Amino acid sequence: MELTLDLLKLILPEFLIDNFDLTKHSKAKETLHLYFEEKITAPKEFTQQIIIAHGFHKQITIQDFPIRGNTVYLHIKRRRWLDKNNGQILQRDWNLVAKGTRMTNEFATFLKEISRY
Image (tube, rainbow, N blue to C red; front, side):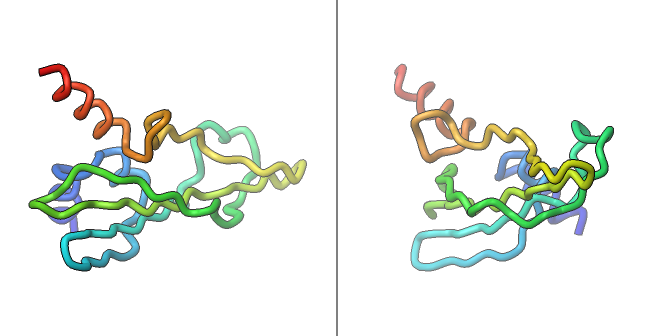
């Protein structure tokens, strides 16, 4: 399994592999869909609170770098957390999508760089 994770880190954003579980994948024609769910590991920023996993936010879909001629879509479900003391819903502050796009920050940066030439 460790080899699989190392390979995924070479083709996908490393933070994605470190913080999300790949739950399923599908390929239709020249489109690859990868489905991720945030790991159930409690966020470090909430260590002072008593929190429990409390479902997921609505799934988001992000277009990523093409892989071997296939369009790649990342379907990501972020986890919600419940503070048991005050009932407040908490979440990590992920910066997954480049502002104004439906792409990952890395892909948007790549496109900006190649458009300069």
